[in-house]
Image (cartoon, rainbow, N blue to C red):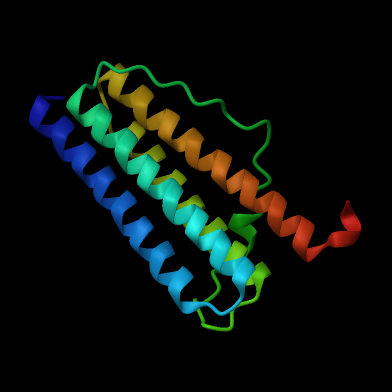
Length: 152
């Protein structure tokens, strides 16, 4: 994989993080529920962190990154319908929406890793996939706790 292709992959990944930040920022501005707004604002901030991380790797692909893989993937997002973003969204729907977005991001990074012949770059995208899996896992925990409070 040549340097131009590496830059193209990083630029694509950065663009996805910018889009995710814009989505969560717009979603936070649209919803009425303060808890939902807080969730979306927090996720928007995390997407900016991802963008900064990717920009760092784009500038210096030799940087080291190791994201711990969560213990389990509940695959709850895969079994949940993608809710529509609405002004009157309930917290459970907001978390379901965020879970699906994180699932899409993790799948994107898995595809990026699979397309890499460079072992170092593949490792970067696998670690980014693990980071998204961690977010998805956290959101799935929130979803279960809010949707099924009796399951403590």
